[in-house]
Image 1 (cartoon, rainbow, N blue to C red):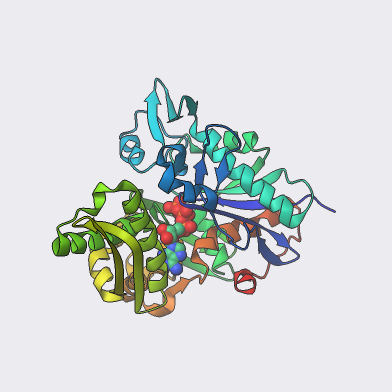
Image 2: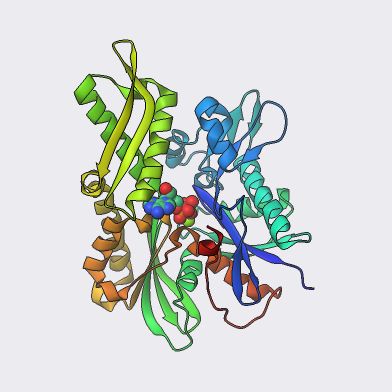
Length: 396
Ligand SMILES: Nc1ncnc2c1ncn2[C@@H]1O[C@H](COP(=O)(O)OP(=O)(O)OP(=O)(O)O)[C@@H](O)[C@H]1O
Ligand SMILES: [Mg+2]
């Protein structure tokens, strides 16, 4: 049997991967979850932990947990963005000479090493699911990746015993995943990837199965994380007005508040309202108080509006760079987990017309599904255009 090649979407907040089994995309799973948070916990002794287990460590040992490593991978230490990213990285990020290093306890780690732990975990999960030894992969690359990113991810792959056969642009993988490939299509595409930490817009000219990017523009500080922050601030603000308590003061509780906001945000993508509860959220007059709220979607959408406005600015800029008007665009693909937020979909539909907008129900998996399709080019699986079906529903 041919060697399995996996396709990996190494994301800022989540990583996922898959391959083709026959003409079907099969994704790697951690327990039953197809996405592995791109979060790494480095203990004082023993093995690093990756994914959900690392996320849980954030509350008790935030200095030993690295988040969003993709943001700094391949970046020059002098880049002005490094300082801004450092604030959300969890563990301390320092520019030492010509290197960027995470300082965890008395040890230091390069971003490549941290990224490698995530890739290594993905490789292990893929071996568990697909069998055999896996040494080859296709990895997607953000449209806005810094110049040093390619080398850095290849080095991370090497550390994780993975040979990267091809680096593919995320928007192209996403366009494939939402089924925009067709041998007869000749059109202008817009792929909007609203992820955890970044919003990228790409203008692509499609000629059948061939995709040529013509313009790309992004906001590397705009993503689902910012929606979560805004949500947490909205609740902290309401608590402050009512009780005069500043929830930011208790760092651990604030981290929990943010985590619960992220969960509630997801529920609000499919419901008009959602309960929000948090035990012993803060102290008033020496007594712990819990939160037990009902969040209406319009209330939080109002708070998110400035973020969506920024997203629309990015879309306008990529159109301007491509020299297109909205009417020129034949199809818009919405990918990335944050594109599941209904208000965002509404705004894009209002601009381009609902019938031209394609949203993947597995928007956060679209890039890895596209990467999995592309493994066909490397011979492990049939070379015809595969049928694309997500197997997430079956697993839930
Ligand atoms: N149903 C949902 N509704 C709203 N947001 C969601 C939903 N599902 C996932 N998300 C959000 O999507 C984000 C993760 O998306 P995704 O996996 O596409 O990002 P990423 O690829 O890790 O990041 P990036 O593309 O910025 O590198 C998170 O902020 C998560 O909270
Ligand atoms: Mg992504």
